[in-house]
Image 1 (spheres, helix red, strand yellow):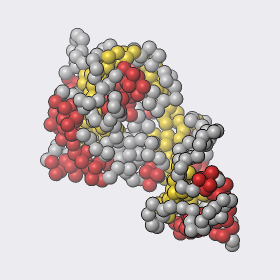
Image 2 (cartoon, one colour):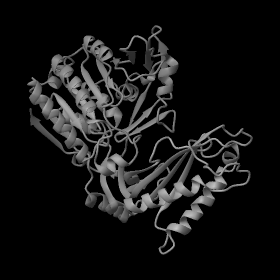
Image 3 (spheres, one colour):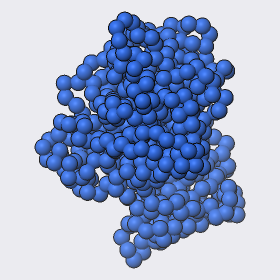
Image 4 (tube, one colour):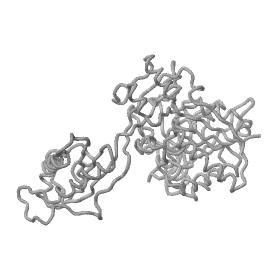
Length: 466
């Protein structure tokens, strides 16, 4: 009997079901799982271990390149920990958004590590694999049929956007995860997935209220980030017919009503609605109550089935090669005139490097301490004592980007400005060389919604024995 079948069997039959316990092992697998909290969670006999492994927080480069954001050794260590824990307890392990971005290269790299661990540790289990890649002809057809729409201020999708993207994925929801769990497996590893699907799918299959399951999943996918103080330690959720309880497995972290309610707003533009492929979560009646000083109980969330299914698409395209300049400044006269100085240097550099060719690069300045993080400096704010300057160039080739940045460094270092008292240099460099070629630069060029007529067809399932 598989781990999923064993757990499901415990909830079959008449009468009120016992509560189900779900262990959120890691806020993002591959950055380390604190062992004491994880072992404390296993000691509480959970019915499932879940791990989110990806996000768009890391930007478009990893999706575009097909590379993991996490270090190989750390990723292997975390995968080994959760695999051994799940097999020791004979409970399902569900991992979503494999390999950071969830496209085929990320999923395949994750599966290679899992197979390596299974061989080394003598583990044998039934593995379900869900792919999230969207073939370009499928997306072209949807666009021509008027079944792609923009959101979050994305421009309308074009045929050229589709052709230019190196990897395109869709976020799967609970229906795909439930199909994998129903295939009598022990472990599910999915490509790009909604965070909630990792934890809500099994309770939903068993018959727990979907609103409560999705709300619980929304919170525990980030592990103990919902606690005070927030952290990445494992968290245990106990779900019943009427609500769920949250408890961090790290004794120094407290899940309070305020901290849990605040985390329900995490990454949400609407404080009352969480949209998923199969429906939406309504939090208008949600209630958060302290059980004690470390635990909170949550009730009231409602689920509304969608009349039609839409999935979020993510795609990234190459925009060029990136090189950057890293420097600092402490002259108050320089800082006060930084915006003007940087614009003047950019023009000088353009005249030099484009003497015999049109401008073929983009140049960006970020002044940390002034407007590097914020869009602009609030009126009346006193100038900082020192600033960090990041100059970024994106050009067609690595050599061209390096040429622009190196020229920029020299002319910014010695650029004259009113009130300058020394010609020795305007900048301080943290190290040498202060200009660095970073490599290919990508941007999200697909961040849209696509109508899904057949969710099963979008996210094919593969099953193998290890």
